[in-house]
Structure formats: structure tokens, C-alpha cells
Image 1 (tube, helix red, strand yellow):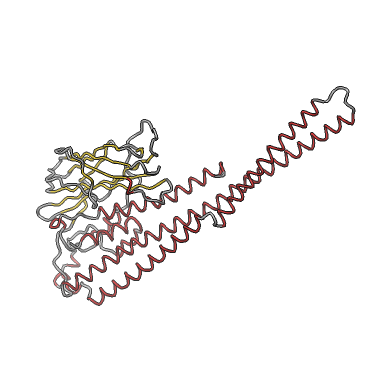
Image 2: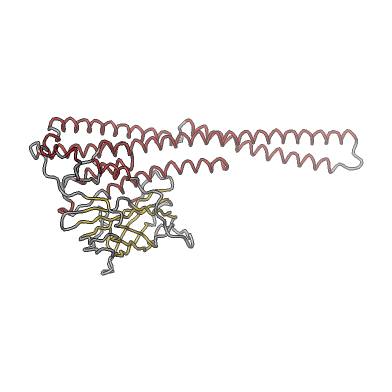
Length: 436
């Protein structure tokens, strides 16, 4: 089955670098030839690249991928160095914080000296000599001057902390973004490499001649997936039940519908994935037994799903007690496959965001998770479809899915990296007031 790698390429590009869609086959294609291409269909082999051309394309894709892997490795090393306590800007920020602490202590001491000097003045007896009064007054004046100087020094030290912490965090944010860009480039390069390798392998298998085009999978926005009852905050060490409703809003029966669900989680920094600490389970209306969503993120098929009908799937999200406080997102979608070979699915993933609270937390009553803010943009995939040839292969024959798993994984990575940068920016803003 040849459609999955091409779909993965298009989806990875849609999530990471929409411009790359110009160089890959879109996921959903319109197989209606225009009048200008009618004559060309008489000789299909004229449009097919030669083995040599495909080998050249595969070699170029491999070189691009190798370069991307090297660049990603360098970006990771750079980020690790920048996050180190020995990094110059980190050292400077720590020194500024120490100086601010010393200035604060000096200010407290100076203020106390003023209080003590004032107490001496106030305690002078009526029999005190003019010399004693003058001496006490002088000491009070000097103490007030020292306190004023200490206050100015503390203000300057506090300002230096803000500047040093901002510089440190700006550098960290830039490094996180650079790593994110490198990882996206690696993902896109790998998708292109995979597509090029498979195109070459297929051409060699067929002796350089292309096979017959199969049925296309098409986007179907009226096949909807909606989550209800998933809390916006889930405490580590607990499990929550919610519902996934799959609805066939079309006027035709879908012979087999595969619901899709994928959960992605990170710690608060957004840099560390905690996917292995969150688990999705499901059970059907006809069975109370909980099953784990498989490694392809699909559940058992709904067969059939009639026009206008819906099916409810009971879902359960379990978060291990060892999971750190952080962020999570549950993606849902659906694909359909008909006995006549037609197929398709949701053109977009719905992403339901939630917070992970540390074990033992008591968040109280919280709202349900809402969809929308992290949905990957696949509009470019759909916009390009009308100008492209159909993708070879039939999904229905194999029971395989469309691009949804790759889209979820790519989007999950984007969420994780974006979360890291946002976290650093938020911490920097908070640090301006606390010097932390």
C-alpha cells in the first residue's frame, strides 16, 4: 500500500513547513483530468520519471535528510550548553541575583541604623549637652544618607537582575526555537526521503512502468468526532472517563469507520515528553471491557455507520502517579472505508487540551477540555489537491488508515516544542518581578 508514505509527507509538511507542499504529492487528490491533460493520458509513460531520475531524487533526498539530522544534533548540543549552569549568561544572571541579595541585606542594615540613631536622639535626657545633641543628630543624618545610598544600590542591583535574567532567557528561547525548526526540518526531510525511496522501489518493481491508479481517499468534513466530558485538568495518579461521538453527517452509509485517538503530554517546560505516562483506553457500547488504544492509535471499526447516524465510544484517560505537572492534548479523528474501494476521513484533527496536575492535587471543579487552538493546518493540502494526480493504491483493500497518525505525531511534536518556548517566555516575565 503506497498511499501512507505520501500522506505522511504531505501532512508533515502541513504541520511543519507548509511551503514544502509544493514539492510533495497532496494527501487528497482530484482524479478528474482537465481538458488540457486528456491527450496526455493516452501515453502515461511519458509523464513517469525514469529509474535514473528517481535514483537521483532519492540520493538528493538522502543527502538533505543527512544534513537535517546533523543540524538537529548541533541544535540539541547548543541548547544543552545554553541550559547549563556554566553558560556565561546563566553565570551572569546568578551573579546579579547574588549581588541583589547583598544589596537587599545592606538596605535592611542601613534602615536599622536609621532606627537606632533616631532612638539615640529620642532618648537624650534634658540634661544633655549641646555637644551630645549635635553628635546624635550628626549620626542620624549620616545614617539616613547611608540608607538612601543603600536604597539606590538595591534598585540598581534589582534592575541588573532583570536585565541579566532577560538576556539569559532570551538566549534559551532562541535555542529552543532553533531546535524546533531543526526537528521540523528533519521530520520533513525524512518524509521526503521515505516517499522518494518508495517511489524508486515501486518503479524498479514494475520495471520502470507505473501501475494503474487506485481509488483516492478524500476529505470528508461531515464525518465528525467530538469529545465530551474530558476535564481541562487531570491529576496524576487518577483516571477520568469521557465520551467520543463519531457521526456520519453524510447521506450515504459508511461501511467501516475507524475512530482515531492520540494523546500527547509534556512536563511544564514543554521540552520533555511524558507520553509513556499517559494512557488512552476505550470500550464499546456492547462491551464493558476496557481496551488500550493500539499503537496505530485506532480503535475497532464501526461497521457500518449509516447516513446521519452516530456511535458513542466510552474513553478513559489514565495518568500515572509519577507523571510531573505539565500539559496534555488528546487528538481525535475518523477514517472510513467502503466495500467499493472508496475511502476518506476528517480533513482536520480536533485537539482537546488539558493540564496535568501533580499527584495529590485538588483542582476542584474544572471545565471540560475545549478543542481548537492546536489544530494542524491542512488547508494547503486540500487546496493543492485539485491540481494533482491521484495517489496509487487502495486503502480499503488493506484496512490501513489515511494520514491521521502521522498528522497527530507531527502535531504533537510541534505542540511540545512550542510549549517549551512559551514556558521560557512566561518564566522570564515572572522572573522580572521575583528575580528567579
